[in-house]
Image (tube, rainbow, N blue to C red):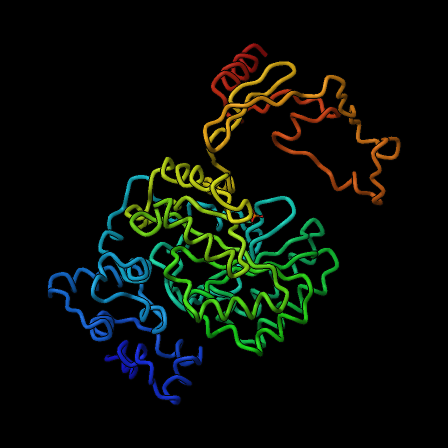
Length: 444
Ligand SMILES: *Cc1c(COP(=O)(O)O)cnc(C)c1O
């Protein structure tokens, strides 16, 4: 089957692009309908040609990991230098995706394991990930949910969405719901409105977050109608996914501006990708462009251990080098948190250079971004409130009804607090524990 996309790169870049053509081009539904899924079409649009052998390899890759590119996103590729193009690398299959590394996993983040009902991952105490769509405008080659890409069977039905909403409704600890997918903005306006209104009705849901890459790959999706829907809700945050400064086009800027003008706080989650953005200068340029568009860099992710991503992965040192090149060198609010999402569902773990060099009873020794080593003297008479969780008797005013009841310390913070007796965190199946338990059993 031939794809008949009638608009080519030359026409798009032509200043005199006819009004009618432009109308189609900027219609997100036209973009979706004309999603590029065939190598032939990419060749035609970019004016390039792969050898028969190469093409066959690419097609085999597509059979395992499907390709889908919005005409808009493909139009950003520099066809004269496509092999090095960061846009091309994010959207066009690399035959290296077929190489499975020994550490690759289908579901490295245990999103399916930590799932109480289909579509929901409840990992952290107070928030959930809710996969509400399995469709995307562009299939990122570095997708962490590569296992599901193009899988029609995993399109959540209304029943599945209702079960998810029901779970959230019945779980009062959830105060933050993260809508992701797929891309929630590939859902019809009505479905988005319905989802937001259902979630907004739940009293304990304080915040709704939307994760969408449409401002990057399909900026025309941010229509006035969508904005009007979003504006009805006053607790929405939005995270998008720019990886390279080249992606910040005038179309993307316009989409972000609409969202920012609607009062929605904007964040960005980048993935550190080999030969795409693993460079301090590129990352600095990217974060500057983001904040200039009122987008706060939120996370920089170490690339996950999902199948077929080995060629995208960098070593962690590169990420730390990038963080070193940002802190102090540029605006603090332009600096993301670099995280490794722990395989096995451990969640996001921040990683950064060390700034605390040493300490004594009354001083800490620190170093700054210039390499200046300095000391901070601690107060001599600091007595931390010995906390027994009796907030009513505390001299700090915690005048929030029942607030201390919400505060259930776990993990390391539990080790630090005064009112719990735990002094250690011990792995469950420690050799010596097993040995000693067996010895006790034998003696009985
Ligand atoms: C990333 C993630 C969240 C949100 O984490 P934040 O650090 O609050 O942004 C929640 N649930 C899951 C399963 C996640 O992967």
